[in-house]
Length: 97
Image 1 (cartoon, rainbow, N blue to C red):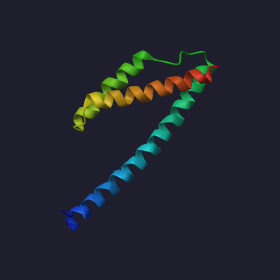
Image 2: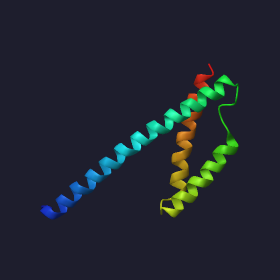
Image 3: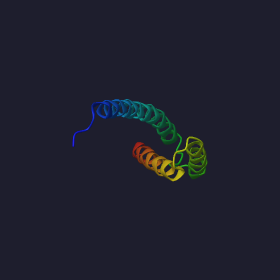
Image 4: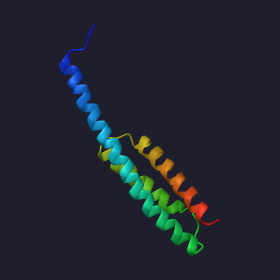
């Protein structure tokens, strides 16, 4: 059974949108990491701890609320942010060496 052309056209259009969103996410993450690198250098220069559990908790709660408002699974959003936080802390710890 072959797929009708209008279905394939819509599929290609949707995939194009997904590709554009993925590119935007990569650029946003790059900008975010530029900022966190500056934070890491500042922390290293002033002997501040790499992690800030109180801020991380606030950010996770904030992101969960934003996710719920956007009808995105808050658990998924929290996992995503935790992944980013872990990577940021790793970068901050590397700057201290």
